Image (cartoon, rainbow, N blue to C red):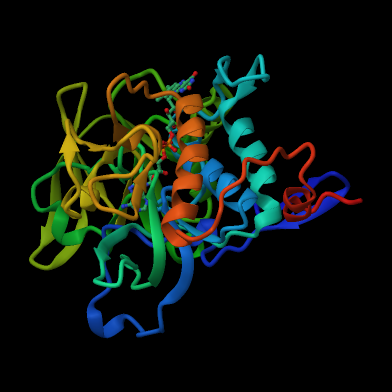
Length: 380
Ligand SMILES: Cc1cc2nc3c(=O)[nH]c(=O)nc-3n(C[C@H](O)[C@H](O)[C@H](O)COP(=O)(O)OP(=O)(O)OC[C@H]3O[C@@H](n4cnc5c(N)ncnc54)[C@H](O)[C@@H]3O)c2cc1C
């Protein structure tokens, strides 16, 4: 999905990406140290971990104060829960927007932050965060991208989203080789025998896409009802009727292997029979679930899997590390987008003070501040 260009106020904004959304490396496959080219770290004022609505708005609030940042997310597209869990649902409690689709909110935020050109590093889980003696931070992602940051904002929501696994014995050995949770290079599966599990849009879209291109496509879903778009269900059924796709209603039971080699998967049908599915590759599209992951290991005080912050700066127990949005907790915390927006505004001022303690702080209005308007690229 091309999300890097936004037109607003008669101008087109281009956002910086270092990872194409369609070529997201699986967070399950960590590169070995020898595979990681050792590039010098990216030096920046702030690193924001998490590109959900609150991480995106943090870019805006920092940008208004003239503070630059890099934004990192383990997912292949920005938007956090809004994009991953309920993109088409309407939100009714965003101030001044009586009704706004969840994806629309993310698109609007992307447009709002475009003037600040914050580079987005997608498909990269942040795995390491260390505070140095000089008060700056070393940040590292699963792909080995390193940052030297003056301050860090954790906007990690409910954690980084991980694919739900197929859950058959021995699957871990073949994950990333013959068992996959996303399609990275579709053309490489053409001419292969494929088994595709799932009843949502991802499973249906790939069944339809691969039909006729793969040597064979078997679609497996646990029940008669599908979560995906009715038009896709109808298309899939027509492909089954035409003999282009084999369909089995059932659950993954066990792998068919010959020692180290992968040969397919046994499916226990709802009819009680065991069906052997001959396959070179298995795709499981069972959705994503959030996992707090490495954030829990970075030495900050936690309460019920959330980072404890104060309500003046939204700073964690580690000076220079701030937390906004669903990831934080404080007395009276409500996990709402508008709460995260407020937190981001106050955190930005606190970050400015952390980075530049001698700098006098002014409250400026975007309506009247020429400096802020210049930063926003408002034409005069
Ligand atoms: C069905 C549903 C309906 C909702 N409706 C509303 C509503 O009407 N109004 C409302 O105010 N709120 C609503 N919410 C809640 C709202 O979506 C959340 O409050 C909001 O998404 C929190 O934003 P966030 O930016 O803090 O976190 P998230 O949206 O969770 O984004 C966090 C991001 O951080 C990334 N991340 C985490 N750890 C790492 C790491 N180590 N490295 C890299 N990236 C990482 C994740 O991949 C994710 O993209 C709803 C939630 C759901 C599920």
